Image (cartoon, rainbow, N blue to C red; front, side, top):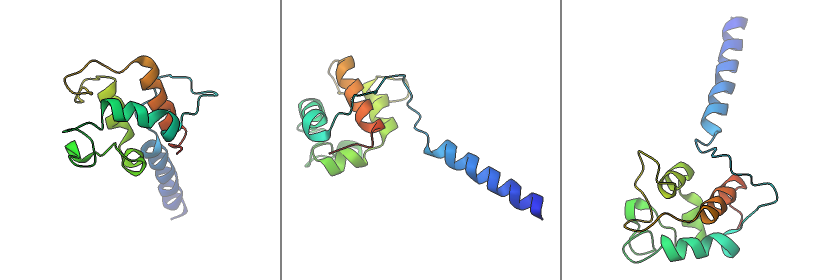
Length: 118
């Protein structure tokens, strides 16, 4: 019985560690780079994502609203990063436009890695 309980504990820890890790570990160095929503991310999203017919407060394309902090903070990290990186298996975003700059993508990534500060 003791071995069974130990096995369950180990399995639980491994599962939690696996589930809590973001898929995206692109290798961006976020040391000293802590973008905030108000100073960095909102401008990127407003210009490229939260536009008419896309991810704004009226349309919520794919159920995603990037026009507010609460909407942006609750969006799935992997889905956002996969889309802006134009990775296989994701819808390339911004739709019908060029890829965001590496600087913009790094800001989004670092914002997410730093728990999405306001």
